[in-house]
Image (tube, rainbow, N blue to C red; front, side, top):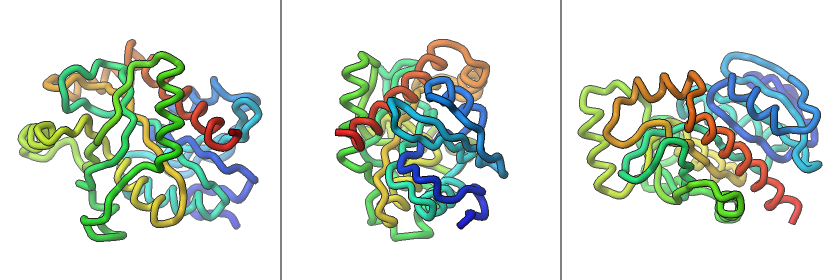
Length: 243
């Protein structure tokens, strides 16, 4: 059945790679065989292709946990079983360089979307097998990466953002994004396997606005980090479903 928001129906594809930015779908297409544009409704732009013979759906989710939750629900309805988010984040620790990848093993649920599903005590964690596949790929490719916690939140512009970020930094969180907690929570509840790979676009302690502006403009090394996270995700799908 055609889904109301993503405007897709079952195509016999099990793997979905999910960027936030619709423009990033074009960069995913560069690494796929025979990419074919599908739909573009609201923030959900999609295309299909293949990677090493494995059918892949690429679909943007926009910004925030609410649109991610809708995406996961509707992707399940069309037969998707494995999801990997490829997004950007701001580092919360020293030593995480621009373009470094953060492979998220669990997320702080500091968002509203995941809390509409279950109480805060419910953990937001990656699927172990899919995370291990991402780790293996990043190591084999020689990409700079870190494995650990992310914090998902709902706004960059709260009045005490610096104070909040510093508090989570002290607790060992590696980086901040807006979607991973919702992805992990909803995917786990709906029986899907999910992972999240974040490309660091903000050095800890530097200005977020300037860094994101450079990233959106395709500046290196964050552009390379984006390419690397796409490769890791695609490799991981092959490892998870073909082995």
